[in-house]
Image (cartoon, rainbow, N blue to C red; front, side, top):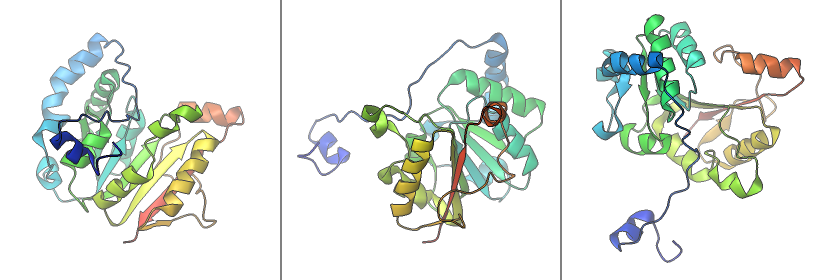
Length: 239
């Protein structure tokens, strides 16, 4: 890659540059319920990366602030947030199909009409489907910390991705992160503190208390009982 200025330049020269991914796709086995949920609900709640740039006003049938979550897992907390903040529209991105199925099932059961989902790589969705200045909030909760040092390059919170993400946020929009790995929290704080165009919303210039908008998961409750920490970071786009 060092002889090329960009991946595009390499591609034009016939050289393929293998991209580092921030996730490993563990497909898992779909339950009959998850498969049925995808079949029934994808036509109304699913978004396709191949369709390119998304017009959220058309997608949701209204103009409202848009919140995007990267890696929603099984989707329970995402559905809860969509129901609690009904004045906003929510978009979730997840690569694991069983989680997509469970999320769609929960959303349909709870009538979360303000929720849509992608089953795709978040980096590609950001690049190809999200318009600049279109998001009110981006959420990244408990991403894979890639705790081994040789895997740190796989962490999604890196300077290059953060700058791409910043462009998708409207001025005043917030990037909200949470992790239960202190070392990853330190990494996130370091990356975000150096990122241009962001301001830390922490009064102490580090971490913030868990805001009410982020539901407390069963996993997190168990961690609290065992004395485990959780770190929330919220950075506002200011320029």
